Image (cartoon, rainbow, N blue to C red; front, side, top):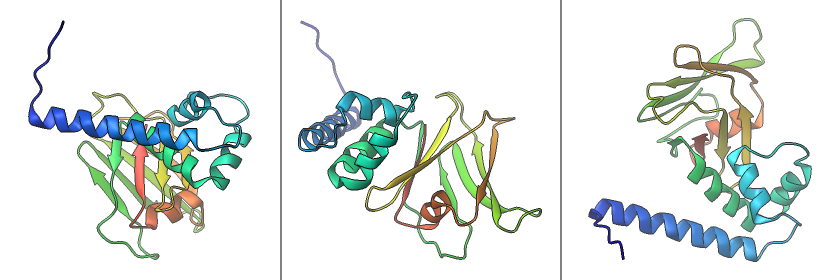
Amino acid sequence: MTTYTLTPQEREAAQENFRRRDRADALLQNTGGGVSASRLHAYAQGMLTGDTQNIEAALDKDAALRAAYRTMVRDAALFILPEAMAASSDALPVRETRGCKVSLKPSRAEKTQLYLIVELGDTTKGEPSTLAVCGADNRTHQIALPPSRGGIIQVIVERDSDIVRLLRDPKSEAYLR
């Protein structure tokens, strides 16, 4: 028999991880929509290729499935950018966490567009390929990210896009994976 000694912080982190997994498993057992746990997990990991319309339709209809999906996205994240302290609908928000900063800057060429800028200070965990933003109702929008250049990722987004709307919402949470 092998025994492990955990610090109180490691023990609490492990217990929280098991609680989240148990919640996700329980939610998935109670959902329909024809989405298997393995397909939802692959979708949350960004590893599912091909047609994902049935998953997106099921997520749109099923709050429990959205909650399970959010847990899976959170677990796969390289960086978690928590709820903002405050935001306004006119402001271009900045989200920061240790090793990462996400901001929006206006485009000079097109007033309807913004630059979504991801600044990576820590790439030891790897580089993110997707930004997912979850609202308070667990509705999630995501955007594919190009490879970084010198630790900076830039993407042009429409000012009125769902990803921008969610980033402006102080109750939303962003995940880079």
